[in-house]
Length: 130
Image 1 (tube, one colour):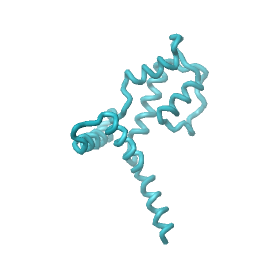
Image 2 (tube, one colour):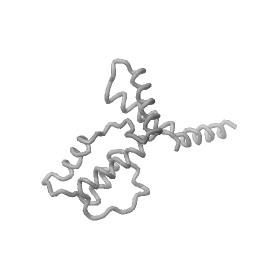
Image 3 (tube, helix red, strand yellow):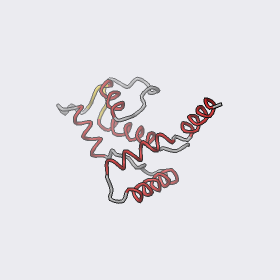
């Protein structure tokens, strides 16, 4: 009986993406370290709700400058592209689930990297059931 309840609880958490929500909120909280953490969390939940309703950006630790910096680290010589392998490793490092992604092209430009990363981060920070 207890094992059945545990499985039921696990299914509930997965179905409703509760762990992703808690992890996202905790990361934001620790990154920003606001003086009023409860109000901050309420604001983040309101932003998540607005993002869901209005299709705007979700609360996320990575902004445009962070994404550009990551690409710059991967492309130190300024070629304007990174390899598919670097691309996949960068996505994994940034917390993107790459298990269902198709094989990337041999070269990934900064614009493609930025677009793809924003898309994947949007999916990963949309911490509610769709």
